[in-house]
Length: 81
Image 1 (cartoon, rainbow, N blue to C red):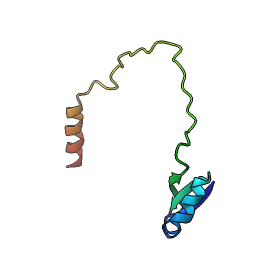
Image 2: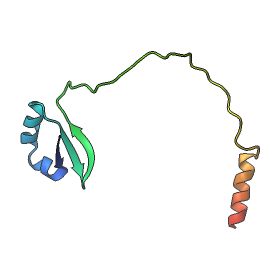
Image 3: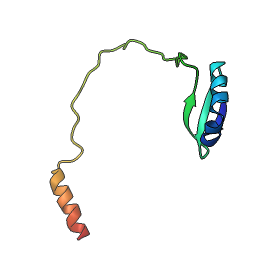
Image 4: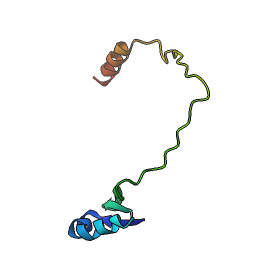
């Protein structure tokens, strides 16, 4: 897979689009960080989907604390002042 900087892509957009039309994939880099990918239109990502083997259950969770959240905020603010 080829990479290209944004500034180089802006300067050579037509040529890069021709490469993509022929099947190439190009990763666009912004300060050496990948931000986007150019790929031919219609090229689908492989996605695997399957049916669930067990029925979904939702069980209530126990609270992590018994303290009132408002009391915790007031206590925290009192410690700061």
